[in-house]
Amino acid sequence: MGLELYLDMLSQPCRAVSIFAKKNGIPFKLCTTEVFKGQHLSKEFFQINSLRRVPTLKDGDFILTESSAILIYLSSKYQTADHWYPSDLRARARVHEYLGWHADCIRGTFGVPLWTQVMAPLIGVHVPEEKVQRNKTFMDLALQQLEEKFLGDRAFVAGQQVSLADLMALEELLQETRGPILNILEQAVNKKVPTPPPEVHPCMLLRISRIP
Ligand SMILES: N[C@@H](CCC(=O)N[C@@H](CS)C(=O)NCC(=O)O)C(=O)O
Image (tube, rainbow, N blue to C red; front, side, top):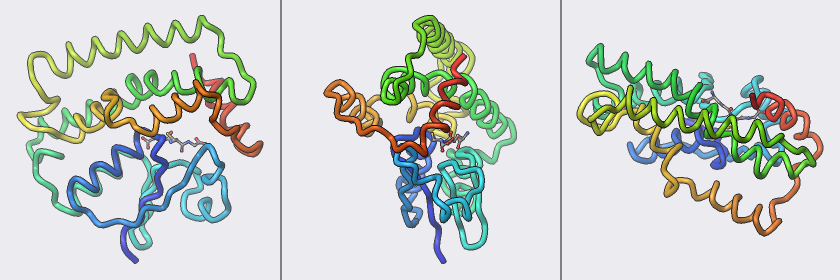
């Protein structure tokens, strides 16, 4: 059985994995798993990933979660160009450093507005303005740290060419690659986003409760 990727294109880590696989000509079967339709809660998906999260990779009997682990696995298995996941120790360590920080500080803040502006209202939850403003402050700080610590006067996070670190950063921050997100924001403005089914509400409430 070939490589299967369980992805939801509304999810930033999923889009990063999809872009990487396509850009590098890695053949895979796309198994669309839409979180807001509750598809990640199905019995079938539970057999594959008991954490019930996407992205998930299935390569024969090997199953892997976490976007950064998946990207590293793909780049190593398919021997993609060295710049993606550099063999140089320090450049590679820089990629890991960035991926860890990204998950906390970029994903942890840039992922929030979709929840406060679109998903929470859909299930009748109002996120206090104080939290929205606090998150904006964290987003500004994260951008400043990205520029000052990770980029400085360089074009890329590690080395002279694009790496997995840049892919994660660009995917989250560049609007052009965010078609599905722009679509859902537009649908939200027009009040056309379908309400997620009730079985998804507990996961959504948990996610909303984690907004600091
Ligand atoms: N740190 C994980 C984040 C994965 C994640 O949060 N996935 C979300 C979609 S963006 C998900 O599957 N949520 C479903 C849930 O937690 O119920 C990664 O980078 O892969």
